[in-house]
Length: 149
Image 1 (cartoon, rainbow, N blue to C red):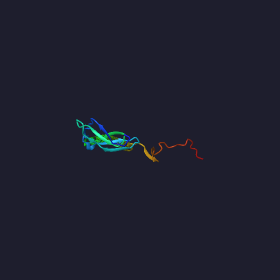
Image 2 (tube, helix red, strand yellow; image 1 turned 45 degrees about the vertical axis):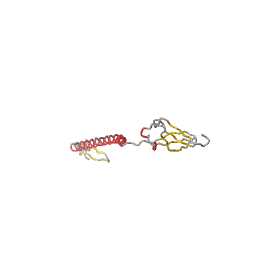
Image 3 (cartoon, rainbow, N blue to C red; image 1 turned 135 degrees about the vertical axis):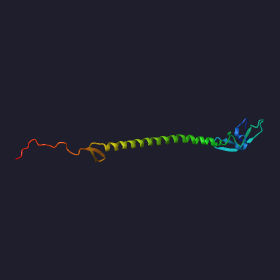
Image 4 (cartoon, one colour; image 1 turned 90 degrees about the horizontal axis):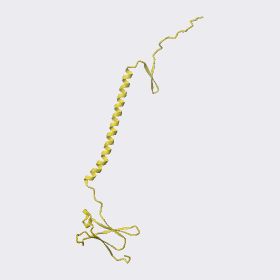
């Protein structure tokens, strides 16, 4: 209505389940310029009590809105379970991998100790490398000419 009079918009057969209480509902008017205005819902009047009405002073698009339903404790627990289960599984995998790696390193070191005790050649360290070394020469060199002047 362009003249500035009151507008009443009636919504029939509105059933919002837990929001049948009129105090929880609000009317919203969307204006052409993108703004919105909230007002109270007036209820009753219908034969089954499901008629709701909104009053406004100018034209626009009208709707009834309700607050978002609150989560129950059960859904919150399910959400934490959905976050915690994959995280816990990842932690178990990481701990198992670390345990296997530690076991392999210990086994490798044990094999090195056994090999060091039973080796036939002595060894020396050159930089970060360990190399076998012979303690002496097996045969003594002989000169082919034993010419003495």
